[in-house]
Image (cartoon, rainbow, N blue to C red; front, side, top):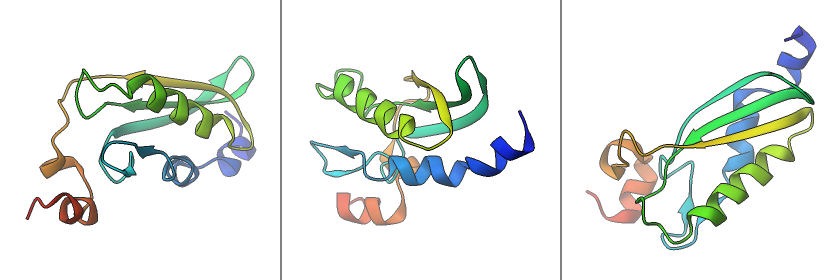
Length: 111
């Protein structure tokens, strides 16, 4: 990957682009809930490729397909990103006590 491409798209940009994606049942950002497990940048067939590994609040989440599509769409809107891959995993299982931000834990009543 060229230095220019690395400088144009950052992991911070990925996080910022995903911040507005909300879980409709809990009404919090997938970032704040800790549903985003990781991100990577690399070369793809159409230019810079962004890959995100994420989970859902449960494997039976009825909004799963909608959330995956929203995450994909948010990443695809980042200038310079030509390829997007959203990898859905369930290991480790989501645990808001360990994975959510402090603010999200407070809003969820986990204190």
